Image (tube, rainbow, N blue to C red; front, side, top):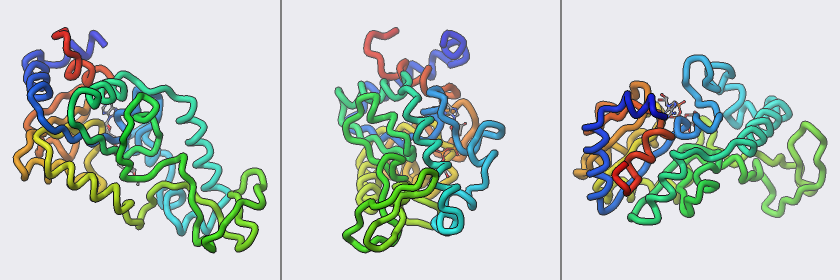
Length: 252
Ligand code: OAD
């Protein structure tokens, strides 16, 4: 933590703190990086990222699920268990605290539920949730009948499979979540972009919408990202160490 404080330019931190304090309406977009300090792997980090170790085409599409339902179901079970064992970090907590004082819309690409567990009450989940299974092509009256270990549960009436409630490649974002995110981006005067590579659309377009409408944009990421160009200020630091500095009111 102290190392990060030393790495951060105090002048930049001061500026960011002042912008946060003055903001009337804050829009926050988070990505996998905010959960990295909780021990949850990101997607695109070169060595540890999920997509460096697994082929997304084999795990994160409806076609893959139909081909290998047991394998994909088990992979998501594994991720659920890992995330359930993780704890929210000070970055998640800082955003929950800020929402208690400011008008703030928290939009996340994460499916891990850690923002909610840190106390954020209204989280817009753009990519769904690991903890909200739904039916794949169900009959409308689906009910779990059978659950063979290692296989997805199936409906007793139509045989449909339960599937993870996450957005897979080739699928649309949940309509209400996307609408709320776009509205919030349009109306904010400060946009915080935390822990995302900015490579996945439509989420990655949201900071640009905020910027076009006149908002200031702050990127928090220890590595360069595709959204650095959109930012008025880039804080090159891990979110768990940096966000508390921006949010804390005691001037420390
Ligand atoms: P990525 O894995 O693409 O990017 C994670 C970002 O977090 C990188 O830019 C890292 O530099 C940064 N990062 C790492 N540690 C950090 C830390 N401690 N604090 C702050 N930043 C840190 O993850 P996302 O941008 O979230 O989609 O990926 C977007 C989407 O791609 C995901 O939601 C997922 C994936 O395919 C779906 O599953 C639909």
